[in-house]
Length: 239
Image (cartoon, rainbow, N blue to C red; front, side, top):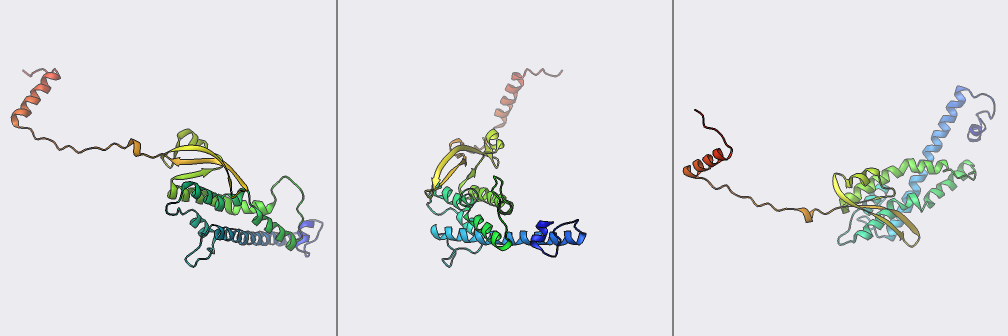
């Protein structure tokens, strides 16, 4: 009860909580969760807008997009005559590095939560609840968006850990693929390690078929072919 009292002084700090006390505490926790979600959205938007300026990903008004999804869609759009390597690194910068390496946007929310709610983070190897909310709120959606966007734009997909299904079937979206293990440094500070799944070109196995028009047979040729087939199959004459 002391935790509930910390957030709402009308809730007693000891004793058995009443239904009313539990209801108050539930509302407090829901409000805190909602507030943290809004903080995280604000901070990741500021982070991606900053990256947009660095990588010249602007809207029609030459300004960073005002929505996280719009920024990421723009980052996943392949530019004319752009190398696949540059495209891959930009996709990682906007959709993977904020999950894996540069978490300053999450740290900013932790600071704001600490100040607003007078919370101290105990030293622990476990992920604290702000990071857990960020993961639940964003990461699965970002990974799915990245896979769809990369496949549609460049016929390739990035995986941190390669799914067993791809390893076994050597296929993605019912298409033959090749898999390569990749390790490299992005922007001089972020070490990325994973697997690149790329569509295998079908050009080498395409066989061009030429349509052949049937040659009409005369009655005599037809009868000769029929007789030859009759003898070849060893068919007996009917009495």
